Length: 351
Image (cartoon, rainbow, N blue to C red; front, side, top):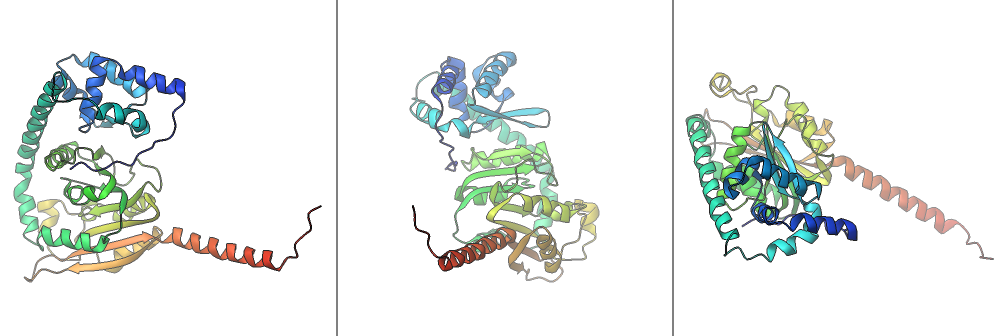
């Protein structure tokens, strides 16, 4: 099931609304919009599905972007397009009312399914080359299902408005948490890994997740953009994990949370050469200290210890926006003080 997106349904001025509707009122552009309801697509995807030239598709996309109906983002040499949240109030009723069981939309949907099947096959071929290393690492710690259950337990039933998974890899955390979020985003530096994640999420019916290519040390999002930030099994690959956590903390919204999952300290040196690990785990105090320096308070730390000796312990850290709480507390004290002063002042008569 696709996740529900957060809507930005502000009123649109009449002349601007006319421009939006004119942009949609063309056969190819309306077909493009109907396809993007199913999730983000590249220019290459759309040329294959619609059977039109790349310059023609690019021109239509340019008009849709200028009208604010579609957003564009780059992923290396690729460009991906998705429906804009800002025009949902106008676009959604139009697109939801289209009959997709008759041509040309039924034919477009069939070709979309074929494109996705090819994408999944390519992703699986890539992942098959990595699978032996991943399987070796998974065999060294508690099962993934145990880790995922611990993640869900740590987060509890609190609603997740907006979620970002930094270093998303194959999208496993997004697959677990995106169904609970109003808006979900994954960031990774590797286009190949994002292709794997995209295929995996589409297989789960999560085609509306926003996947972006970018640097975890400098994520391209505004401060305070997400209610939950996840950094899952990423820090041990980094030269400067403290810097990455500072960047992650910057994304946490007021009263938001940051979840870190990684290995406790260990002595398996072969992971440096065999799996490109830069760091051999982290102590609970070390990560909690980095989180505190970034302005977050650690509220939960949990170790998942394997039964067999010599294996890796997985640690979870859940932190929350400490500075925002302090600011609210200060504001509350200030308001109480002002209320006390007002109560002591004699009331003036109004002339």
